[in-house]
Image (cartoon, rainbow, N blue to C red):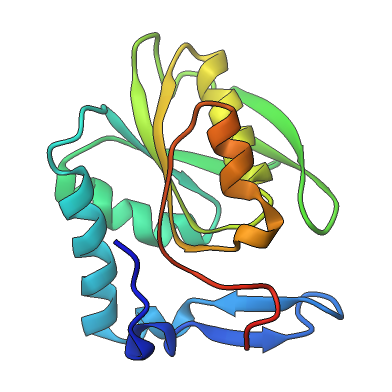
Length: 182
């Protein structure tokens, strides 16, 4: 399901030249300020995954936390946090990755997943796919697999969805934007 309705898409605010010149940042904050829009987003994901065969919901720091935690609650699934480096208190596994802005590290508690677990990963958008691929690699290191990577927005020109799918990770996004679309 792709939401191309102007009312829904208008709640995704373009922020020009953030976080650096030439970038159009897709701000989902207005979606969270609209109870109707947030319900539409969450209900769409819940409807997609209610009968799917997976055991956990994985969420990416930080906007993925907002979406995925509600979906995990609605589906009664355990929530796995993938955090930026240095934010988790216990033993962690760490994975480096490239973003559109530079290099970063993602961490997860080393005891979060077990052999045979599977999860849906949630983030706000798929750009280059680096963060989601890092989370998938961390899950694989624990013996788990990724059922699907889900987001509100896809930026197809950055080929993140294609990179994920090339690694055997299906993707699902509610809508997409071109890099130049304002």
